[in-house]
Length: 197
Image 1: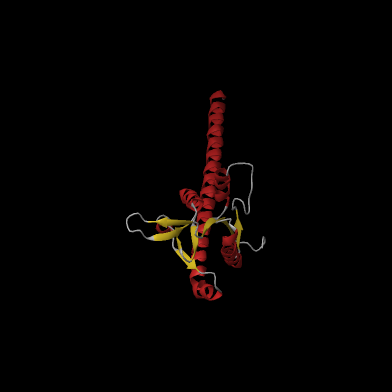
Image 2 (image 1 turned 30 degrees about the horizontal axis):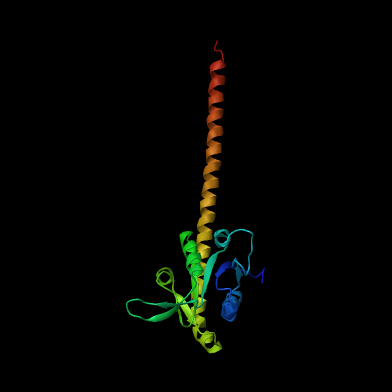
């Protein structure tokens, strides 16, 4: 997997046992696309620092973030009385961190989970029920979503490489220019020292 990997994805997901099969399904989808899952605090990463601090360190290291939305809380709209199941607040936090540092966000939603208002404003998402038939039905859409996320990652890498190239070139030209100025000043000093007969 390590050598065939074309990108890495920070996996924002639940660590509860009942959510493990769905999380593992999404990880298998990523691996099939040669995306290496990384960074999940408590799953792929541990540290004697706070969870928030570790998230802050791990998210920038990934090429993009994959949110695996599974139900955590029952939510009731106080006006309509409608009941839904929402995801963990930590997934919202990790999504916000990714958005703030301009990382592409890919979202897979377990059927029956309300993703809230923020996620749909920054990305499209795919709802899966965990069955093979449903996965087959959504495979083309999954391919498209991951491909577009990867394209964004590659574009950002090219832009960063171009910026680095131009910075290096500009610094090099500044050095050459400085040397030329120093040489011309030395040459002018030498001309002043020359005695005419």
